[in-house]
Image 1 (cartoon, rainbow, N blue to C red):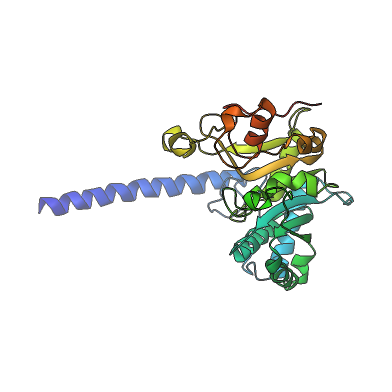
Image 2: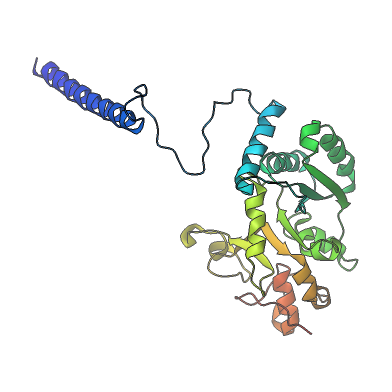
Length: 304
């Protein structure tokens, strides 16, 4: 009998506190309306968030996407005015083997959330070119109008091309030669095919404008917790910092990279990990830039 009484008292206490909470919300919302409006709970408005009716059409409707883009553009333009044509954002990706669907998913997420126009640079094996073009051209017109694309063949320096292609993972080293292939492009955001965008690419692209006069690339640490990071536990070659850096997302100012004469400094160094002790300083720096042995701290090749 005592247990039932205690349970009843506990429920009564919860009911009283719940009633007080609801009453306080109704009271303060009534004050915010000056006492003239209907009583009801009005959530506090978050700065930068616009109120409106809940959109139930879902992403399958082009109107949903158009409303999202216009809402984002309105926030960026901060008050409106005429929309001036802007230079596109350049996004590069490399796809080899069974990476077709994975890469298309990445592109869908990038296009869906982007505010500015996108220029895609897709590096893929020759047998994947037709599949990429057929898939991209089959998308609805209101999506296709948000981006342009170019499909490139995988290419490596003629010397040791086979070693370059299979270094680390198939075609993983292709990203190192983007400044030499995309000669007319100033900057690019490179992403791996397994990246999924949950926010506009514009926010990532904006970091390029924050580079100082000496910075030419940006990457994130491989891990935030050294105790469970991969490089400091398993790597048998030197790496940057305490946990290494992740090249799955790279911001590249390729104009500055080309001005550093990386092509001249990429000397003929074998992809094997052995023999680095006898290499010259420039070769060690070159190997480190290309993912091989190098100093524990990153060094750019010296300017001539």
